[in-house]
Amino acid sequence: MKKLFLLSAICLLWACSTDDKKPEGIYSIEKMADVMQDTYLLEAKIQELRLRSDSAKVVYNRMIGQLYEKHGVTDSLYEKSYGYYINEPEDLYKIYEIIADSLSLKERLLEIEEAEKK
Image (cartoon, rainbow, N blue to C red):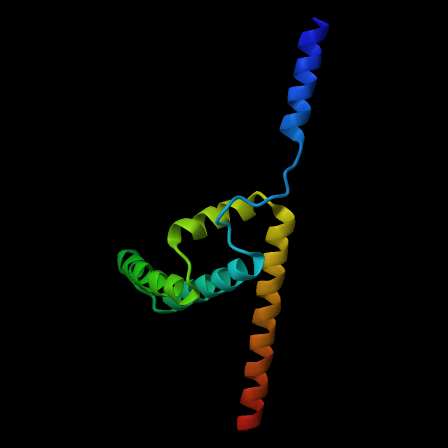
């Protein structure tokens, strides 16, 4: 009985230990932030077009391929990376911080540009 308890405790500790290594092929936090930001902007642009859902899906699928190509990512590795970061809340928070900061900067630059035009 003691051996079974000891074996169970060791297995539990081993299962609970965290391995801070990223799996192979996971994109960096910075790259994910860039791709995710552009993906969100693409989705917003498509929503503004007010297309029917089937037409919007066609446009999205075509444009997302171009977006992945622009960033040098593949859809499978992007999805794998996204799945990884969903389970790493601290890293996911960093990604969203980068996105928020970048969008705030872009907004501020647009405001300055508009003010200079007046």
